[in-house]
Length: 185
Image (tube, rainbow, N blue to C red; front, side, top):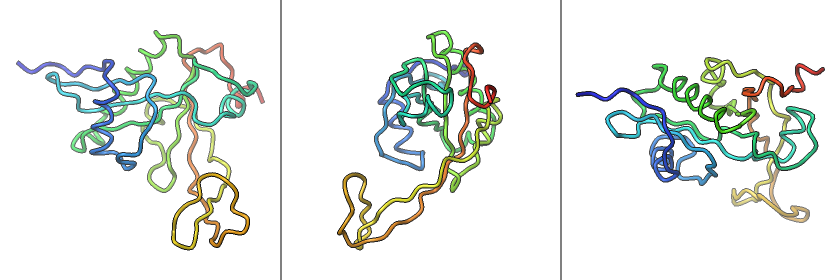
């Protein structure tokens, strides 16, 4: 008997295995506060990971809130499916059902980003996320040997600045009483 598809909480390690195997960021670590899997016949075939906001001013730019800790506002930090499932609505099903589970947990909104060099966020559009344009242009400093300087001063170092790819911003309101800046303006 074939079991139906389910979206349910899974462990971080289950999600990490899928991300490591199939996501373009590979084994790059990520935070996972709320982790859900798409399962079939007790096998995890997809995962979506929600984390605390990664950028301190996200709550300010999205909602006009002061800088601070907002545990009821999350960022979708990873979404991954086994490759043969891509493009077949499994991703939107996983995201949609996980959003309903997050609402039951008291989460008010989810922010997500799509790297413009890789995709435009069609999955977020399919799930009715609001589109909020591209992130501001930024650059990163690279030493002459190609190593990126991620923190600290670069004055006096030999290297060059390269533009960072911009990201498409998306927002999904679970609590309709929460007003995003787009609707306030």
